[in-house]
Length: 296
Image (cartoon, rainbow, N blue to C red; front, side, top):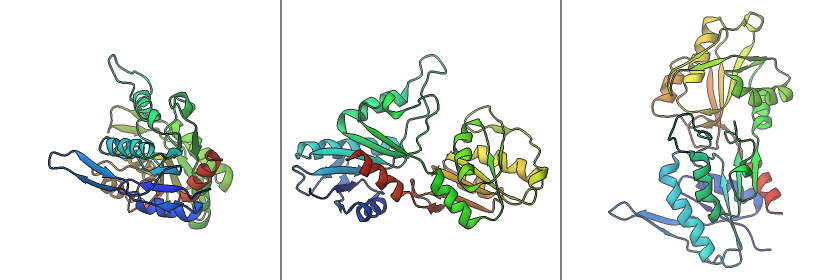
């Protein structure tokens, strides 16, 4: 069988190279530029007839990435690729899965309906599944959801002495509990109240038994950072040691990283699902396992 062709969209070259080494694949970066009017030019300079193709594109800031991704997928199909899959370490548009107010777009379903016709399979890491319990409920292609909890737990075990895991809200329980099962660390889950996109408060908790522990905040997404900032303020007020903040996906909206650092955590750590200075946990092996499973 011919080698898998990995096509990285801009910014995904390093991940594609890691995956190629793990999967004995071949990397072919597309030629891409913009015309003066802002339209995208894209060319795949490789013979793809009868070959298996995997596009590599993490989907933070998805609005600028979506059309080039579709152009690459459609072009690979037009060139006779046997299959075209998508490796999206971070999968966007999972938050709006219901209408909270009249007239709101169900962007998760719309995005999935636009992407599904152009790919044959999808592999991702810890998408924000809240009310949607399976990606295949909205995507019309086979999917593999890989979980970073064990990888995060392995990092904690090697980097942190005497950790206590802090979940900033009930949504974080799924991440925190899974990491706790692997590390054996105790868990404290707080309650979050959100008054808007950037206004967050968390409940007080009895942290007295854990003052000699290093608190580890674990969440799936660090976007505005407000949830972690509110949690850090609570931990600091309780006299806890400086905390380690861990996010699966470090989105870091404008100013979020600086704001989070200003609260003086011991360290801010993310996986490399989204490229950022905080990347310390590699997820290419997880993705490679998912790709092998789905391509059997």
